[in-house]
Image 1 (tube, rainbow, N blue to C red):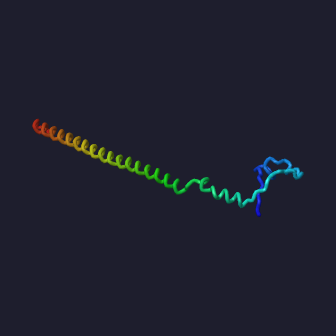
Image 2: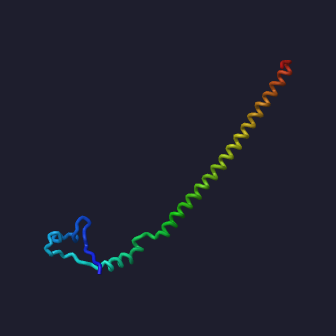
Length: 116
């Protein structure tokens, strides 16, 4: 039978038992069957360790939601970019038309005045 005795991390004897170090055999530390402790710990291990599958499902769900939100933002930004590019092209076309119209008007005016 394997047994364990309660020990503090900083000493080699049972917890709170100075007589263990004095070897006067007055130590009242009890020996416990390690298989009983192992069985008790393993029996409760499911409560001590988080449910990994549930945790990973929650994390994945949050990441999926965040990914969907970011994809919506990206799609909206791309639409806005295309809209702005279309508006800019329309403004440039209108400006070019005004310049061309002005050049033609000036050319007609010069022709009417006999200037070339």
